[in-house]
Image (cartoon, rainbow, N blue to C red; front, side, top):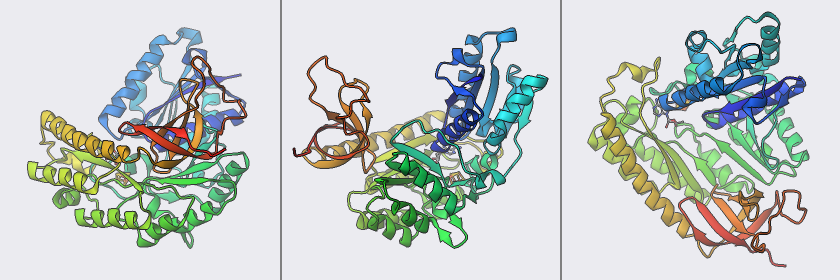
Length: 448
Ligand code: 5AD
Ligand code: SF4
């Protein structure tokens, strides 16, 4: 039986795609292994959103190749994901030991491609744009038994000037609502308690008469599920109706990831983002009005072409004003094929680094304050697992903060995930006793 190993780089969509590949291969009788040396098929699921992510994936590919047996025992190497789509044939030239190159829209053909390669020893390139796959039901294997990722759409039509996604993941296409509902119903029946609905821009989901708000309402009404999350949002498409629904639906978690990218209207325009800084701040306000204590996280790019010190100051000021719970800050890196790649990359590497550190510093201060405000309070936690020490429990708040829950086991005592007394998959109240930037520590506040 063929054993496969998958390693994943990049966003939640890639994590989902890896689960999908695992599901498809297992449906064909292949077995997933978690040590590359045990595998006859090694898959690297790549990300091309930033240069750094791409370099890391290829460095890992070399490592895996160097560690693998050679000649007749060499495993089949497969490069999947966005970089597979972007580079195509070039991957075979640069990495001659790679046998399969498969883009995200072609993962359904994976077993067939492996088979053909094994029979013919001819390299297989599968990077066609296919849209029919989104209509299928996905035999996904979810890594976690309590929460699952569920793709609701693929691709993107927004063409933000810096972003390679529309080129590598293709045009936006939504999954039929009934397929998503059937999948989530099945998950709830199997005992899953939380789903995250995924798409590059879930706010533009549509299936005949249903938009994202309709989908969210439908999913929230399914019995068995305790929590619903979704990502990523686009500030230009986040409607008042959706914000109202987020406020009203109890199962919808109090966390929204709303990428700002820049606080300067001039740069937002150059980025082709389609909103202004004041519109963005209006959304933040409306979200907090609709769901008090909602956590808002964001993405920011520093050093976009033409970003002056004044532009950057506007970003920094907006970060402080919006008081995000977390900001993911990236140094602009030109991606070949995007419209911004035509512009001069005129902010020096040291200046980009300086700007990144300034945002990170401001954000850390805010995050620390927000987390410390929770000390002494009771928060609701969905318990996911034992913490890495095998003793305490690990879970998330509705705002996605990590919580380590003291189980008061005696020193040296450990528990196991099979221990029926542990509240795995349950929502429990936890009294917070201390806090770091993003991680909280507390004690169960269940009253016996
Ligand atoms: N350079 C730097 N950051 C980028 N991102 C996307 N493309 C680039 C790029 N070329 C960031 C954006 C996006 C996040 C996933 O990655 O902030 O929201
Ligand atoms: Fe990229 Fe913009 Fe689409 Fe997000 S919305 S995937 S940043 S093009």
